[in-house]
Length: 406
Ligand SMILES: *Cc1c(COP(=O)(O)O)cnc(C)c1O
Picture (cartoon, rainbow, N blue to C red):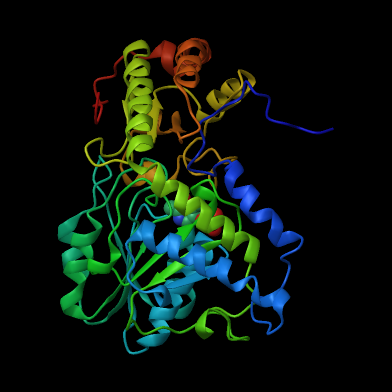
């Protein structure tokens, strides 16, 4: 049996992954066939591939405002870039035994940091957030010291879309000689970048979150930053990431970066207005509902709405039956009944955190997609609440429940 997305599927899970753009696929295809060569080879078949890899690098540089081509290292994606950045910093500064991160990082950062603390004796500072998902700047300031090797804090949150004041955070770390890394996987293509003038030392990105292929990404490495490679072997990527280049993937990443830049202004404005209408109408139609995260500083494509007294998994299944793909926040928490670590870090009331549902849009979405959700979701929530013992036995707005935002 083949499962194919029927044309009627409304895909609103773009923070988990995006559809590869047709133009991206088209540029990649020759690198599986005629242009199969190894870019390190001397002969013509190999050498013909090298320019395509350079072009991809230039396109990424343009999107990120990166001055030097040597500052971009291709990797297998966001997870590898995150791990590489953190481990590299620790190896480059072995006398520094502390790490700073935030409570709402993606598992690609949080799990690595927790592992280092538990099994390798590093001291880990996990900076908390407030009810709107904003970083506790005082706690961050207090954690900074010359004992810290690396700060790894995300640019924008994958669950709520909350944007951290990342440049400010990087500036604050500077006087201590700390390396500053940011996971910008969700920010790329959605916020403007100018890394050439930035205090950021390392930055992670991933192609499949910007309509590129899965399994390829990049690490930005500011010139002069001490670096220790994770993989050793061949001299690819100037000895910083061994292994024959994923040529088709890299070409796809470059094309995806070019498309993201070309549509940057118009598409982000259009997507923001779709997201805002979806959010506004759902809030108006469905009582006991909160929008999570910092609505003032937020990615244009993301909203996570917590519906009180309903189970997120049930919402997702019923939406899926109606041909709508959304998420309960972190894909990694799906399947467990625990609210995600991001909802817990924001202290979203338990009764609401369970019903947190993330809608993440992309340039592929239309007004009709939003109409579909608005048409079916209020009925779904009503039916689920009718079955919920908590909903029927409680006052409709319990006294202890203070919406963070309404
Ligand atoms: C998706 C994601 C990652 C992981 O990227 P992969 O390319 O899938 O390894 C890391 N961080 C954030 C914020 C993400 O959204």
